[in-house]
Length: 131
Image (cartoon, rainbow, N blue to C red; front, side, top):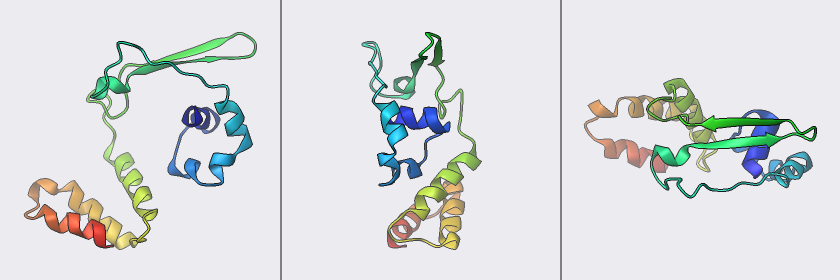
């Protein structure tokens, strides 16, 4: 309910929406209290099919808005663009307790984008834990 309320209020959900201050926002909490959900009995519990779903918003005037998500973002039919993934990765890295520099994050991105040509992935993995 909280994440749906954030998405309805802001149009997107980011890690900032789970900060100690953001999770106490009265307007979001009020809206979240009005969110309910159910799980389809036929809903798969793994794979991209598990991400399919629908949402219906009931307005006070009786109007309903419904959306079906048959092809979720990140599925084969709706792949996420590299730029979006890179931005999300950078955002996550900047929040790490170790505080990696922009140069280190750039290096991680570059190495990750060419893993197929990497001779020793262990070096990248170890660097992720030391910065």
